Structures are given as structure tokens and as C-alpha cells.
Image (cartoon, rainbow, N blue to C red):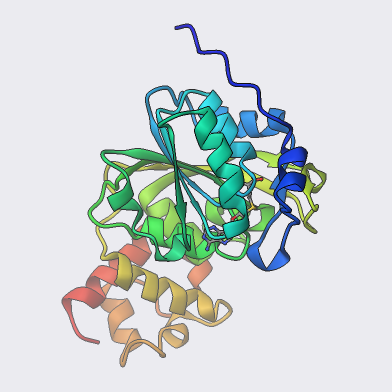
Length: 284
Ligand code: SAM
């Protein structure tokens, strides 16, 4: 299929200067100015032709531009920094009818109601809200969710926690919640020097593809509560770690066929689901 020639647009650095977009740490602003890199991220999300995309934190619009260039039919970009909105409106004018800018806090935005049908979530996430946003997306009801795939940039250490297998040091709440409902993998690392300003650590792009059915049945809120308690005190045996949330942890663990003396990191995702289901069905 022949692609339309992309409109001539100024370099991102020029856009930042013209709109006074000096990066603010409090908003997690580490911008990508290299359009080869933003194109690589956009392409990592698969063909975007005819697709809807939700982007969190478009900032000066480098990744947004690549999403549009790669053929996304509609990009819905949620940005909290008012200073970026004018810059994004210029981009919207260059791609008529394809970029919808939503000014607001992504944590307070009902994304499902913004998309008609299914969408891909693609973002270079602000480091301070990346984890809460991911947990929210993973807890979406009903399942399968309104999004087809997520292609997200995190700090490398967070990316490693998302894909960490049981028994590993990085295994914890994020790994259980992510692997329970999605196939998650790290696609590639991005050097800190690719950002303006450079953050203190390397970043990684992670792909999360929803499983049609979760690994095992569980109520997402109860699972989250159990996993948070279990890893909240990860050095303790499960019978002690669960004390803050259940009256009789030993009875709960035994009813779920789990040795009360194991530690959280020894349990697989299905075992956490078993615990959550047992807790849901009986009072402990
Ligand atoms: N996508 C741009 C890029 O790759 O260059 C900017 C990425 S920067 C890491 C994160 C962006 O998220 C910033 O533009 C920041 O203003 C925005 N942001 C921070 N917190 C937000 C929130 N709660 N809701 C929406 N946007 C937010």
C-alpha cells in the first residue's frame, strides 16, 4: 500500500524552543528528540495502519509524530502539561482529523470511553505514574480489555520487574499482575543519553499482549491485595506476611494447598490466584 508523504515538520528541538517547553522534572519530562528512535518505538507496536492509538504524555510530540507517520488512523494523546498543548495542536493541523488531544491527568481519565472499539496503548511513560497506570490497565474489567496491545517505555528496573519469573530477585507484585493477564516481554533497551534531559538510568520498551483468558481465575482487586501483602514483607514466610490482611493466614494457606512456611517469591502466578480465589470464597 502506498503511504502518503508525511508533512514537513520542524525538528522537535525547534518545537520545544518555540513553545518554551523546558523539561520539568516534577512531570517526569524526559523527551525523545531523535525521530529515528521514536519511529522504532512506533514500529515495535506492529502495523498501525487503520488502528486507534492511546498515547500517554505526548509532550512536544516526537513519538506522536511517528505514530501518525506509521499510519495510525487516530491517535488520542493525553497530556497534563498545558504548555505542550499548542505544540500538539500544530501537529494536529498537519494531520487533519487524526490527532485528538486530551488535556488532563491520565490517572483520572476514563480511556475506554475515549476510544470507540479497540486501541493500542503506546507511550514513553512519565516515570512517576508509569507503575500506577500499568496496574490500572492490568486490572481492567471486563477481560479481555479494550486495548489490543501495550508498548510502553519504563525505567529498565521496572521493565525487569514486569517480566521477572518466580524465584528471581525482581519477581514481585508487578510481575504477578502483568504475567497473570498478559504475555510480557522486553523488546529493547534505550540508552539514557537518548533523552533530553538524560535520566539517571537506562530505559526499556516493554510489550504486553493481553491473554484471551488470564492464567487462572481470580478477582483482580483481591489478587492485588494478596500479592501486595505477600511481597510487602518478602523475606517473611507467607503465614506472617499475610497477617495484616487476613485473620487466620495458616488456615487460608492450607485451604489453598500452599505450604504456610514458603516465601512469596517461591509462589507461581497460579498459586497466587488460588490464594485470592480461596480468600474470595471463604472468610479467613
Ligand atoms: N512522549 C514524549 C517523548 O517521548 O518525548 C514525552 C515523554 S515524557 C517521559 C512524559 C510526558 O508525560 C510529559 O510530557 C509529561 O508532561 C506527561 N505527563 C506526566 N504526568 C502525566 C499525567 N499524570 N497524565 C498525563 N501526562 C502526564
